[in-house]
Image (cartoon, rainbow, N blue to C red; front, side, top):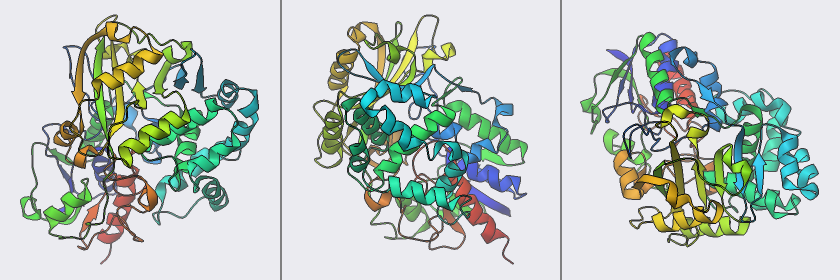
Length: 469
């Protein structure tokens, strides 16, 4: 009999498997797709030689992950590549605010009226980032806080809505960039703890950058898989699980799936019926005949570029997708330019480009024209660079990854109390009604992102269970 069976070979499932294999347990992973990866894959979606990331592309939480830092993933081919700027936020007048590794450079890009306010915002936390990240991403109750005072101070700043936090800024440049950071969790700006979301992304950029993985996000999943195999674990792909009886006998089962899928497979009935799925995205992967012709020079050297003219425009787009059930007329865009630092992703002189805008859960329309109109505002002539495009709305995203219910790439709405209490109110969110069955997906704390910490935390819960007599 195996000690542990893991269902789902995404970053969280693989991390949980590695953590348990490192502790000497026998572990087998079962994945429905024909390759590992989950939300960290790389595929030729457009033309031969153009390698795209269907989901996650830039990894501020990955490079800062306590779980990944504790593993020798570089031995297995993972290499983080950093653009000159982690992120740029251009404006229609051809200027840009930036999120740089340097706090001073970032503050200066906001202008003199907000530079001091920004420095004062990050100053208490950045020197203690490693400890804060561990405490923040290890909650709840998987480890005692190493610095409870700093964590409490962070909570006081971050728990209110981001709209409260940005009141300390006077000009639009800082407000728009910070609103864009919050939008990465696809939640309206006025939700609880959205201030913490924006602040975490900003601190992560200063501390560790917003890199891409050389060769694409698949490199993260492949490194985790190779490390797991060296530890004695096994991985089985193209293995669909419809019920627990489809799996071999084990002392514990760990699911990197959505809560509703787990309930269906394990026979938990309506246990997760109140779990909410959030808005989706419309994703386009481009093969380009050269770099994006951004008007703002800063955007040309940034790994990630946020596209939204103002905080109000960003808020309107988020509200349309999340609360009004419609696609925004002017979408806020998150874009990634892997080819800025990784020429291996495309043939010589060509580039891959990654972009999405927010749409309602399950939306079946086409946002391509609206996205490209928005890009042309900030990069005139963009359409002339397009060689090919691969589009994916909510139905296509859900078909590619069963965890993306209705196209929700966060595996559950990251808004309201559910941003903090996932998948339901519980002192042990990784446990389930069955004592031998656990959940480790992004539906558990600390939530969305390629960081493996949900798997890391769940593995601790499994380990405590398995060492009981």
